[in-house]
Every structure is written in C-alpha cells, then in structure tokens.
Image (cartoon, rainbow, N blue to C red):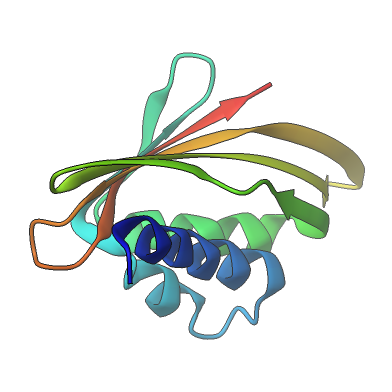
Length: 130
C-alpha cells in the first residue's frame, strides 16, 4: 500500500466515524488515527482547540452532542508525502443544527501526518472556513 493511500484511508476512517456514527466507540476509532501529541486548531486566527489524542478525538463526539448533523460531504484529499511527514488538504461542507438554528458551513481541513512510529498518524489539524 502506498503512503498516500494509507493516509487517505486514515482520513476516511476519521470522517466516516464522526459523520456517520455510531457514537459508541467513536473516540476510540478516531483516536487510533491520532498521535499522542495531536493538536487541533481552528477559527480565523487558527487557535489551538485541542491537545492530545483523547481530547482531540473527543472533540468530534462533543460536536455531535450539541449539534445535529443533517448532511456532510468531503472532497478527495490532496496529499503530499515527504519522507516521514505528509500533508493532506481536504475540502468539506456540512449542514447542522445547533440550538434550533440551521447552519451551512464549508471549508478545508489541513492535516499533518507523521510516520515516526512506523505507521502514519495525524499530528496536527487546522480547520479553515471559507
């Protein structure tokens, strides 16, 4: 299996886990794709929103506890591999409900992966709105 394919499958596993459920086991499924030092950043200033495998994986389930996801789609990722480091950029769009209001958002995720442990794991994610 090529490195790019392995990374694409990791992204599919993460996205399918939170977008299609079930919520049982979601944190474990997503967490298995993250390095122990995983960081998630987002917002206009790309501020850190989560640190560590468990906190970052839990953030996906936390979103679903307060929002109802109506639809979600992902573009095929653009992946660049350089030695033991890779970057993947993936567009997304979703419609969700929060506190009785419908929200439609789109943006891009930028993931950084490392193969320091012999397998690819996400070490950083930035969520960028459009």
